[in-house]
Every structure is written in C-alpha cells, then in structure tokens.
Image 1 (cartoon, rainbow, N blue to C red):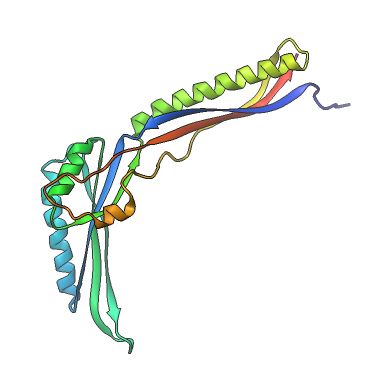
Image 2: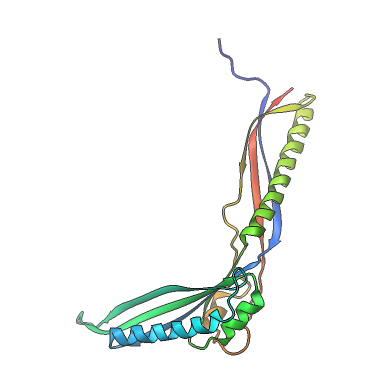
Length: 211
C-alpha cells in the first residue's frame, strides 16, 4: 500500500544582483499636419531621411544601432464628419551601449525631437548577471535547507525536486523623466541622460528529503 513520503520539506530562496544598466534606447519623433496626405507623408519622409543620414554616419553595431520606428498617417475630420486634413508622425530609434555617441548624435539631429528615453541591460550583461544571481539563489537554498534540517533535528538532506526561475524583465525607468524628454529640443549639445540601476532576481524553489 502506497504511503505519502515522510520528512519532506518544501522551501524557496532567491538571489539578487544590482547592476548598472548598459543599454540606452532613445526615440526621436516628429509630427506633421496639412491638407494633403501626400504632402504630410512627404514631410515626414524628409524628416526621417535627414535624421537617418545624420545618424548612420556614426552608427557602430552594438554601440549605436539606428532604425526607423512607428510611421503613421491618419485623416482629420470636421464636425460634419468630412476629411478636412491629415496628420501623421514618424520615429527614428537610436540604441546601443555607447551613451556619449548616442546622445551626441541625438543632439545633432534637428529634424526630430526626443520623445522617449529608456535604459535596459544588454544580452551579454544579462547572461553574466543572471548567472551570478542564480548562483546566489542556489547557495541560499542550500544554506536554508541545511539550517532547517538541523533545526528539525536531522543531520542533513537530499534534493527531491528543484525549480530555477530566471528573471523576465530588466528594464527600469530612466533618470531623465519623460516630460523632460518630450520637452527637450534637439540641438548641437548632447541630450542629457543618466542611467540608473536595476535589480536582477532569480528564484529557486523545491523540496528536500530530510535524513
């Protein structure tokens, strides 16, 4: 006859590492308004083309990657429900690890203004920090299991089942507030930004057999 396992302990532990964010994503945008859809689209395209031309001269894979963002064009309606104009917006995104290069380029682009600034972790930094947090979580799990086994009057334990759950999101709010980014008018000076820190946490849970 089957009997449930005896002296089995369920527990969990976590390991955390504070790390400086090393990836900057800066979104520059512009809006246009007019009576002709073709004219508005042309103005947006010209603004994006000028921004891309300025940014690509400084592009460096990993340090500064340049890409286009959202591009939208929609009709504007009168009170009578008739189309009386067109409005649109376009974006160019600068992203990479070289903060001075990115902010200098953003400051030189005069066809777009800064709309959003965000910081995150690069893949290389993510793998490194996650491995460190995982090692801390496992060590914490082992120490907790050993201490609990002793407290319950056992000499030790063996692992029955264990699950390691890595972090899902490393992004955090930038030091430059969104309102400041929206209000900042690109000029020859670098755009002011300051990266913050984020906490990477790995959780370990499972069961141990006390012995």
